[in-house]
Length: 350
Picture (cartoon, rainbow, N blue to C red):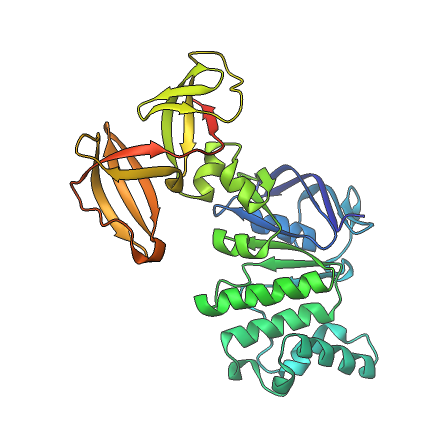
């Protein structure tokens, strides 16, 4: 049984179609991140699953229960979902204990107390039960929001930009803690963010959205290394593009020389294609006879990023700062570029 199934979901907002025949499935105990540019439909999809979005068609199923389909539209409070928002949505006049207990009002008082005590212990806030939100740090407030969602014991957790208000050093600590909590309690989650780094750290799979559709869903590593399109490639990281010509079944001809492939090229000889090259898939070397000129050098700690103009095309190269001994390139240096061996990703030439 899947934790969430979305089939052929359409959504309109003021006559504009926001979601377009969208399909998505989450396995049990899986965390999926919705990633994409502003306005692509990420939050709309989250709201649709939560029951907060109108003008929908299609089917949404949470666990074994259909919550949206034709005349079926189960209200949000009956969908058994936990919600964690960007602003935490804590009640300022209620204590930490009462904020967490707010959604448990139908339970006996004894059960409420035990449930709240258990989840506060999970998020390490037992000693803060009597404090009010204004007396807590941002990270502590986020833990209260997490505790409140967990106390409800939902079938599915929905998170809308939950870490964006946290300082960088706190953010990834909270991400690690929440991921561990969800995994240890066999809970599934759908998570919206604008940050690739957050998605990489928190999710099992990433669903990249564009104009109301999921254009590719896979692990972060697969989306980065084997994107289905240039849109996916560019969204997932810095990209260089090299025009290539199919030379034979195992090699391409390019401005950077003959490139030998690990697998058979399933394209006709002389077909023009575009090869994706990540900055770390290029090697750079000082070369008095090289055809590249260094235009910019940015030292970024663990690596340096070098911009090279080679035959009137700009390439970005990332060189690791191994043991603090990376080569010190200067603007104007003549260099050569070499494509390192890797699994080639090519697109049709635009």
